Length: 452
Image (cartoon, rainbow, N blue to C red; front, side, top):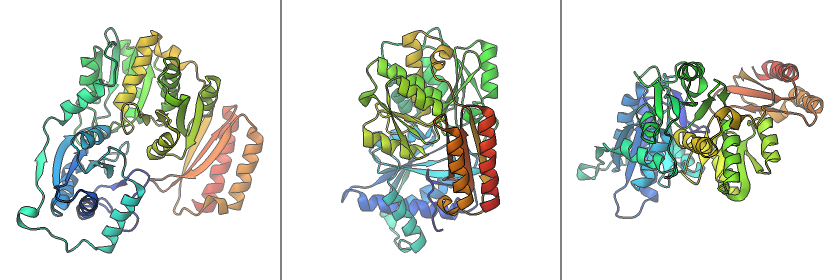
């Protein structure tokens, strides 16, 4: 199978390598073997499996279960639950690992596997490498426990209730959402059951949209990447706030009462400023990625908040947060991590912390968001057939240097490969839209010429 792990687990088109039944069964076997090797002697290991609402989840869940049980490890099946919910249950039930069948914000025909360690964190690179090596070498092909030594699978019926209680515990006991009208876009994904209940039980008047998954409508023109319906519903219901999750519930994009979309950068800015003023921003530090808007950097600087930058991907944000003792980090795409509440990014918990700022200050969301001005930004994705080192492309390096010179200190440019797709991303931020568009297109043309 070769190299199967990307920046966020394994991902691909369902029923095509590396997401065939046979591949997934092998991933299950290798993961179970690693768990047994790292587990305590004499104690039976168990692995949690959860999924989002994709039609392929049924097929792949069975393959994953079979692979794990074939290595003598038990399986706890959660059914559809947000990715951060599966991380929580893994830790709560003291399981040896948690596997999530999801392709996050991708269309329904894709699927993937994310792996959490027993601590509720993404699996370390070394253990991912070990799983890959076990699959490619075939070393565990003939390890076959028999009779009563094979694993057993059991469904956990109260996983949703446990996760609802966990999320609500992140919202202060002395606060309520009474009097607030909230629209929730569940992206026909894993939050469709839990999210409306959580906000309703905390006192809000809830309008849920895209909360009827059928296996193929997940992320389809809805959710965190497509907020048109959410914005319209917020205006129609005169809501105080709109919340859009992605298919597996680890991302959040919001919409204020005027219908204006608030990116992950806005959410980080609002939450960071409020946490600093309330004395809960430990270390007075926030971590974002190199793709976060230049305007957010300026905002944090003006607020007197230290800013750390990480590589793209929530696992890199998390690593930098731990390294610098930060409790808040996030990406423009809506991955927001509150380490004082969870071990991983969680869209629902991020939404609840945003609402803490809304309720405590009494300010409308548009007012809270107005403190940060986004710098004009142009992002162009170029499909590539290969990924040669960008440092070796002389024409591109020269054009990037010229762009930096023209932008001066009023913007920046970034050219990088996607970690999950055959794509090169060009981002330019600057003082005007005209300048960012022109420079981004110039860089994109060179990328197309060199490697497109």
